[in-house]
Length: 263
Image 1 (tube, rainbow, N blue to C red):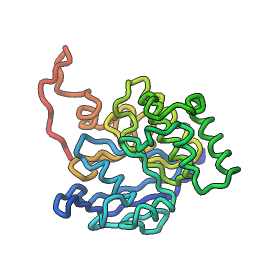
Image 2: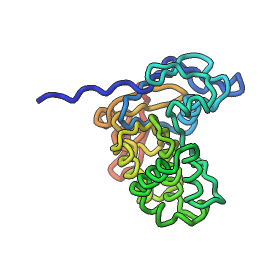
Image 3: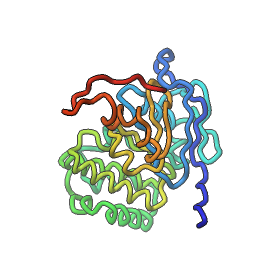
Image 4: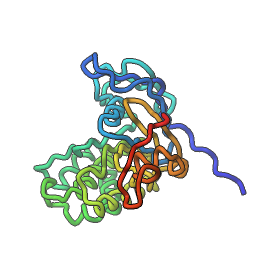
């Protein structure tokens, strides 16, 4: 049986070091690679540097990274202004979703179509409405009146209207009920099936493993572990620290100790 060819690299980060206020080192010699057409996840606790990494890639932190290179399709993009990076196809959906809450769903989407011809805008809107039917149903509702899951879908839909080569989504399950979070992740899978590369930040390891082709585990501003979901599920440290299973529990499920990390 012939194996599928490995997809090309879309994004490559090498020895990235990012500072806040020119004095607080958040990312420390971080390197990773994102393959085209796949879903990659950054998993880790609060303060690990996951959001900082996305903002560094998007150019949202002035004069950062201080060290290292960021290559998009072989072209270095580090320390460019956000508008320049966005024009190359990098679109960032922030943790707070960044919606115009007083505008309707349709108006939020129309703004994302700015600069396109009417025909192209209609075609793009039709595509996102097919992907997220609830947004068509709620088209005349103000964004602030949508549920949390619907707001997340609107944020992703608006990003897709920019035609991203790389879609970066920060904490898509944050504040959502488990069932709603699963709906959002099913939508992200559909987005991936269209060929869009996704880099997502997530604290919920179970959700991330369920959709990702490859995962990076971040702690203290660096990558401490990486691999496919299958590989990570076989790692004892990952299972105990991020999935809550493994050694250190008695028969009733009480944690008796937490073993030392091996990274």
